[in-house]
Image (cartoon, rainbow, N blue to C red; front, top):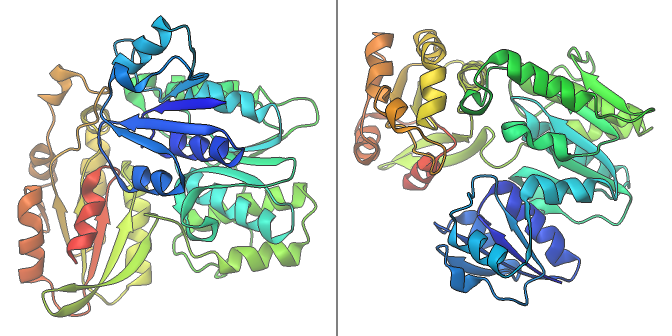
Length: 408
């Protein structure tokens, strides 16, 4: 079968593309911007097109899968429709796949990727050989967001945006937490909670729902990744292990060895000029994620000077959560915070809102000497001039801010 992905640089679509590739299908894909993800799937054998063009769609293609952000005006989507080619959104295609497996779906406003990785690695260690589709890269999966398994088990990260997870048919549902997230789609927190309830209601008779699990005392001080939020993630993974009858010793060994994933408190050694520093890259972009990560950083690097560079993600999220961001940075337990311009998410912005919110407005509202605004192009030089040997640089956000890490 010949399958084409529109928006293959997405963390979900790229994982599904690798699944089809592993099953022997011919896979191609396009994206507006090349990235680490498109480079990764290209090296595995996916034909990549930069930009969207009707010419990328040939009549011998059997299926076109598109990211939820792709609209009806997309030239490739229109070409596929004109040629009568079957089209599916990523959640629809993954939903079909979940019906073929015993599926463990990890959902929640925060911690999905980390918990999915913990479960996948635990099951791998136990010999259950799962297929895993996850929203981050995992070193143990060949530095990929996909693991090919040969068993009946499928572990997926189930995102709530656009109610995507309602397409899935899981046997086990993990809900890590429910928070005010994706309000550009849901509008109200009540709608967020209703979506998660609807998802939980999809469980079949005999299915398992894991939610509100307290920190397991056996997990305390066991993990290599810092933070109470990760102890909660591990406790949920532990419960999945119990349901699957995995030996407790294997569960605990797996969690003890867990070193984290790509851009989830990912620690590296770096240099500011010739001064050796610690660099931490983190994907956190919701106020509560930021607060948890800053708290974990202070606990881990108690005596060190910590610098944070934060890039807000999407104008609408920043608009709806403006007061929460202000509260988070007012209480930030670190030495210096730099907030740079909001990352513009193509296809998910409202012009009127983008004019009403900015990073400068957040900084002005915080009114704290340790919180400043800088344009992205000025941050590297500022840090190299001001950071000292042994300092910690925490780079946070879900946009392109991760590229700053390479400067150090």
